[in-house]
Length: 583
Image 1 (cartoon, helix red, strand yellow):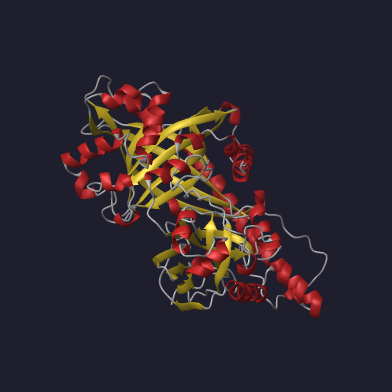
Image 2: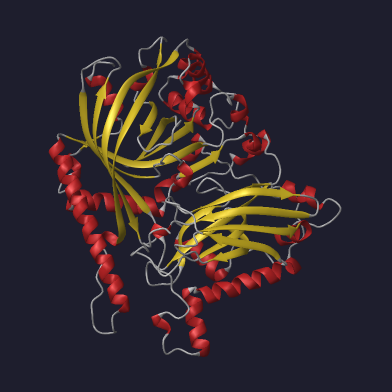
């Protein structure tokens, strides 16, 4: 049995919640509908199954040990001329469950945030936290639900116009006293959490090229590489790319500042520890006020509207690579371009995670950077052949889906360094940086998470004893972990309103489906391209605004620092390389 630790910052509004006492009949139903209680969602599930003819759904729950972000895992999906059969799992973390249980509707998705119907409604508990779900659905009914003409070539038309579908799950929670709203999402065609996509036909180079006409403003994009996914980049570099691991791209909004000494870092950490205590206390008092007898009691306010502040302390060891032997000495570090391997003590055995940090767009002093990361085969990278293959991957200009190389090429072009790609060099480890890092994840009541870290970074050159130290702290949105797809995700209020109230995005009933229009949908591109970085929408995103507001407030009110006098950082490795006389 796993520890019973329901989260204090969220709960589920149940059918018999205290707020419904004294209400009867139509008034009670109206309030339950407004708060999206389990009874209302079960009625919605039954309605969807009836409207869309979904009869063959099998759900099996069990208890398993799990301590990670809740997620969807698509196990198998097979489409024939007659049926689509899908089998998937939904994993829930007992440490982060709502009280008294979780509430998780699972949908079939036709495109990002476009829901066809609800497949299942799960109510996980600490003792039953993993569900296996399997459903079989007639292809003709699926075509009608999606508005595709049914005829002699139904399957062909369906695959052409819907090359992919998604299984998406929403973990609901009442965090604002306004009912059960999406608090976390996983799966779907964006594959949040690393899985969720149902590929109905093989993707082509034309598909990938066409998808680039659509701007992608998600902070994190990732896809697990494997033979079954038929990614050209994987086929070309299968000798070093780890099977089943992600190639990911990120749009990183960040503000990094350098400070003079360890004492400043210590004071910042103490300030955030104090904030974490205040946020926790406020949450406990708010929870008490919900169950207390009704009286004139002022409900406590959450500091900075935060519902939680989670702290971790880790040591990172980074090996920085550069291109050695060409016309310019250490051209990457000399030009503030990061190419590094990151190692953390908690990484699974065999992990070889390499990242490249690309071009940055600056708008009024606010910065967003394009980056990418790949998982390589450790045993291959311990050989000279593996390092040579990495060099070829960096130079690759043939595979349109080599997002890692495209990030590097884009920043080289911005710095006027494209000639590097034609020079004779070798990839070599030239700098080691060991960082002690205090990390904080600060979560708002709409599930937006702002990252913070305070660092003491010590740099050394391979085989040398001299050291250099940089003290810094940074705020960020969009920073990935070992798996970018696992980064916490919230749904915007606009999406919630459309989903729950107006039913925007819900496919028409089979009887009312529109006549087929011969226009194929582009695939959902599983990576960013450089043009995505230039979208003005990035600086207008709601979580970007929250990030700026929280950053400015904490620097002034918690850290007691003058932001205007802080030294702006951005690349610790390049600073350390200069101090060590490498560049």
